Length: 385
Image 1 (cartoon, rainbow, N blue to C red):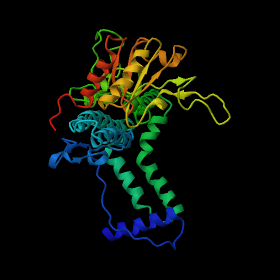
Image 2 (spheres, rainbow, N blue to C red):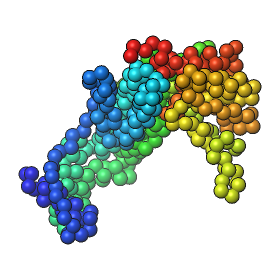
Image 3 (cartoon, helix red, strand yellow):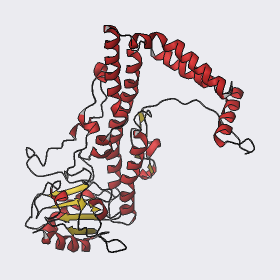
């Protein structure tokens, strides 16, 4: 059997290359098995020097394409923390927050990926085809690959026609039963939207659990500015039983821009950005709030009346906490609509683009507020190393 698959693999590779004179060697042939696994811990080994990222930390079904996004965000989360620890700007305890933050995201994304897989079975079952029949059809198509293309296509079409003819004839019938089946098919196809639209998962995840690298809000939890609209994502649970026949929760396909600590900084086009605002020909460009962020330090954004925050950001650098600071005026409506704080308040963003802390308004001691909060983020207030 292994020789068969080696020969078949060689034919596939030659057809993809388009030539027969390019040398190559197939070193191994193995079967692919769908997994839905997440490591118990992302950091371990001797003195915590072993850290898992990407596929070494989690493996999802491919349905929904969430695995790569999750892995890249893992690296984005870890890189700035490692950099600050290596430079002596943060405690090694900060590295523990990486696994705490990212494992919650992996749990949620793996659950949705698995639900997506089961949802794919629903349209097939509506047609009266069972899962084994669909798998057999796919396997037969695979076995037909070595034969010439014209014959392969003809044989594949004949097999599909025989397998699905009864189901499709019933669905296309001009009667009440046919109309019922067509309606069920459309409903089943509509439920596949989570394969292609998961912006709530991609951008709406947030870090708001104990021991994470953020400072929780101190504002009134009943306030709209403190209520997280994406709060459902972190449950890490799939859709149970018959619920796969229902639409996915709104938090999976809808992104709500907020500045609640732990959330991704909302994008806003700035008409007069402090950075990258002028082109080569002196034309004025719109620039995202994300263009303000630094990869190796925190970024503070405030508004009119927040000049004291700018001074405080410069002052605390003497304590080893590096920070950039920007004042965005009230003319930038795209930002004022999503910032959720008063003009004289502030939002502090981590190098990975997630909000570390914020203040709804000016405080009596801005420098003390920032230093206390960021020492907590960097785990300098309870370091054991």
